[in-house]
Length: 379
Image (cartoon, rainbow, N blue to C red; front, side):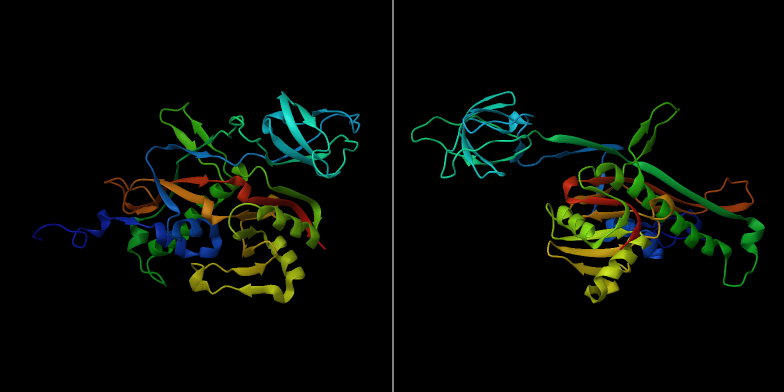
């Protein structure tokens, strides 16, 4: 057939590459809820310009420390050893939270503080090992020079773009056969699409970053939630109680947003159901990209509960609390999830298609997220 300029409507369908990023997210949203959220929420997909990518993280200066001296100190001692002397500077006013005593720091040498005791209305008292010390603020004298400069240093985080491929196909004869329900290739496209989404999901949950340069070409794996979340990790060690879950909620809402998502195993969802009763509200599916979501209100923030069926077997006692504000999915330009059709060899009597994704994960402010694990029952 003779035609004018070729466009995306008049080229042969067999030559077309189908952009499937959002379609993959819609096939069976509850099968891969984290992937769905990352692909569907505006601003969560970011382009990487290289398969290895980095981001920087920082945090405010620490304000809490502890006494580190096994025999303790008398009310008259003016040299006190702490765990982290680098937190302090001359002119800091500190408080022993166990006794209420306020002190003024006059010198810092490694982890030893020289202080003026009872620098406030509370008298000096015995200081014991592991007493908690907090830095209130700096107090500068009139006309004094600038206090010592102190700042935290940014930390570089690294992850990789991983290529995930899911091929499928039929013989030419099978493709030409009539079947109940339509062509088998259409069924396989949907089935393979769900499996492809699950592959991405498992990586985003449990992947560890790896770049293997031992072969002819590089092979990379992206790190996921379980790798990057290091601070807020709560081990239930068996039975999960409502009190323990409340403690977990208090911890994860200390930093970040006041609305977070809990990707929970069926067992942990059952635990929450048993405690919450009528306090769980169903969120309309048109607001959650088709994912089944229950809203759980705590005094610390709102948890959006999502039952995650991939948290099974050895991971049946897991739940991931995530702050979507600090998560992104990364992909190379033009290499988000696509369905490549009719990619069999020219002389091959078959039809072969393949889902292909270049995908990476980015988790910032890891203290805004949390992992609950080790749950085998609840009470």
